[in-house]
Image (cartoon, rainbow, N blue to C red; front, side):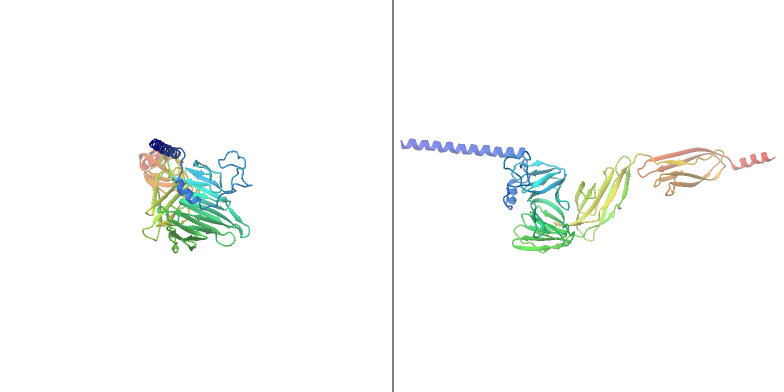
Length: 448
């Protein structure tokens, strides 16, 4: 009987183990399906590790009225206070509410709350706006988690806290009057506090990058920053940067690379084309040798509609496929992980022109006598003009004149105007030119 009981227990144990194995198999399949149908961006383990730096979110709020899913609010379920708004989105950007699993594609106008996450993908950008004077720009392949915007009436300052998991983020904050915004950014390597310059209308302009080796680089172009890690705090002044490795204390800040000097094309230049866009060469000068550069080309002066954002190892760039429109560009220097401030911004215009230039030529009268004759006319200012193949100078008004030597008999007069887009207008005339001696004999006969 004891043997039967042992046999029964062994069978039960085998069955229980089989059930556990089947559950684990089905659970693995379920997780695989979640990864397929619900893109997670960065791993949830990494995300939750950063998110644990935050205090538990408050579910009681008088200011919110929408559920986390964005549908009708459930009973007693209210969002935390508004932290910011997603005001600009370019290419693929996804968001995740604090209590949701799936990442969803998002667009402009999305309200952001405590512990919401935003992720950009390749060649994507997003602008997070706190108020009219303060915003953050997320670069491509970046992930941040937001905390609500806090305000201290006693200190007359607001404080925004973010966890940055990967990528890069530029910020521009401004002290409006005597009220300042402090931005606190936490990465795997460091905690950084960004402060605008003291005084009325002080600004802070900065960039924070989580590098591929998980180190973090904090660069300050205006304002100051306090960077803390491993119990040590360093202060970063304007045009300084520091890179911090996880588990190590920050080193002393170093100057950021100086901004390059742009050389070509000239600002406000115009490039014309007829069918195929022209090749445009960009160039700049830099006193430092062996430095890398970041070239940014956009359709707007605020660099929101970016066309190219390239890292280059040489001080030049060429593009031959820009369609008609206005363009803006600038360049920064890059030294290891440290990026300097941008150069001046230059603007140029690309114009498609299929219309040939106007061309009016005063015709030569019949019976003209051989010898010197002045051809006059008018064309488009800035065009190239050729008379009988010879280049002719055009006045600013478009007027021109050119001396030709007419020969006795039939003369072919050819005038050609070519505009900046290579559109061409021709004028031609066959002129019967009299011999001067025949004209003199005819006059003498009439006198007799």
